[in-house]
Image 1 (cartoon, rainbow, N blue to C red):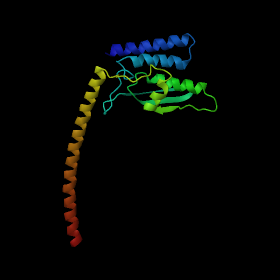
Image 2: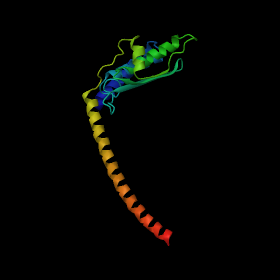
Image 3: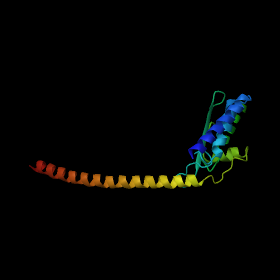
Image 4: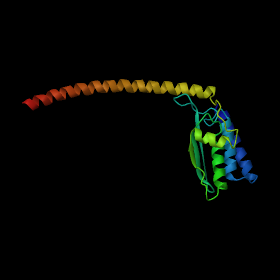
Length: 178
C-alpha cells in the first residue's frame, strides 16, 4: 500500500516538474499535480476522502500565489476535485476589473453552484471508497470506545466527588453548627 501511495506522489511530482520545465506557471503545475492526488483512492484527497460523522464526504482545497493571493474552498460535499473550484476562483481574481472583487473564500454548496456552471466537471458524485468507508468505521469504533472510557471515568469521578462533597458537607455542617 505504501509503495502505491509513494508511486502516486512521485507521479504527481513528475507531472509538476515537467509542466514547470515546459514553461507553465507554478499555479497551473500545482493544480495538475493535485488533480493526480485527488484522482487516487490511495490518498485522503478527492476520491477516497475521509467520511465525516454525518456519513458525508467533504473536501477542501486552497491555493496561495504571489500573483493572486490566498483562495480556498471548503465543506464541498462529494466534490472529487476541490482544487478545480479554487483554480476558478484564482482565475476570476486575476481576470477581474477593479469594479468587481471575486470571492477568495467560499464554503459549501454555494461554491459548487457558482463554479460548476463554469466547469461542468465540478460535480457532486459519490467519492467514497472501500478504504474510506473502512477508515470511517475504524475511527467511529475508536471514538466510541474513547467516549465509553471517558464516560466511565466521569461516572467514577462524579461518584468520588459526590462522596467527597458529602464528607465535606458533613464536616462543614459539623463546624458550622459547633
